[in-house]
Length: 334
Image (spheres, one colour):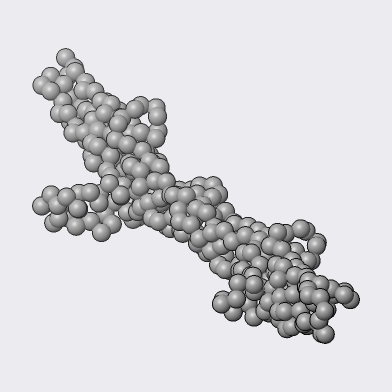
């Protein structure tokens, strides 16, 4: 090119410019998507390097030359660039613009392939062009996840960016999918295993179970000495195990509290007529091997037992009670 008159020679186009035509008085700026890193070019000699885009006037193909502002710039996060990309704005299927990364893969700035820097990391999922931590209630196992998976029944997750869900601890349940937190084992049941979607056992007969009960054994790890000394810790532990039904009542399986309510069998029942009920009485007339409940005992001779009896009542003067199971005393005959 030559901007002056009466000159004997022409000038080479400087770096960052080209002179494409004969008789050029001024050089043209290096076009977008190209690199003009030498003098005297009639056209762009190099395409913009992969993973980058080049604006007008790009002077070097070295994208790490931070002293030169007219250098290739990295393609945005979530996209990749082949050679010759001209802008940082994406137009689908126009490969002179950045293209969206494959789903399940992570494209950091400067990615040259649709797989970017590799599969989406564990604990995250990657829709096309994005990296998102798995939200609570879900998990993202392994790598290359395109969407989070909900926690299955028996599991929960309250944290973000996790690769697995947690098992519900003893004394709790996790019903349904996508739980954020466990819920207490419901009254009347025992949850004695981890990872339960529903309660595993009913409260044993002769006892009632408040919520969070985590063992079916009323004597499990019971420190009698601590209880006798009224240790707050030991006493607090007792609410996590079956508690004996009160005297004068009996309990079938699955009883929820110690409030007597005749005919509602999830609550204690009044002891039957002709019998008496001590602590922890079940509705069985015999004791099963290993059973920690007490049998409902027949009222002994000489006594009578109306409904809801704890201690048999002796027959008063002028009355008698023959045999077992008397519900009332009989007046002596003439």
